[in-house]
Image (cartoon, rainbow, N blue to C red; front, top):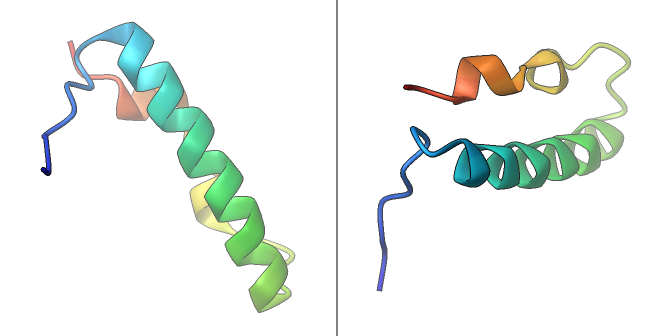
Length: 49
């Protein structure tokens, strides 16, 4: 079942950010990207109060 994650919960937002950053690193490596903007996204941009 697909469930919408609540990025307004700081604990959940932190976990989401960790997963996103790990996957972006893999994607950047596959693309041979030296400047990959998604890797610059901060937790603050993900976390919505």
